[in-house]
Length: 121
Image (cartoon, rainbow, N blue to C red):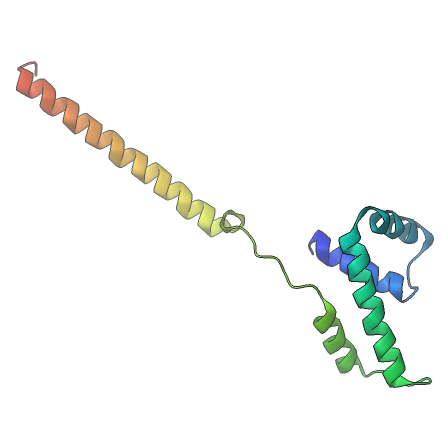
């Protein structure tokens, strides 16, 4: 789970009043330091308010509907850099090592040819 996902879940729990005292302090410090988090909390509270208004008095959502709602309000994942994938790092490593080997071989051939042409075998 990424830091953003963890903070989003904490903000949801905070908005629903489901955090303990230590988490509340952590979240309130983060909110005080970040306008982006305050905006995210406003979105979450708006969504929760809309759901509560729609459901009225005492009705509850089915687990499927709750899951669909949580999926809808989760922040979109940020794109990950290519080098975070192990296979891509390995392929890049092979490319660098292979390119270096070809380059070194080519330099060797050039130097060998120059020595032969100069007559110093």
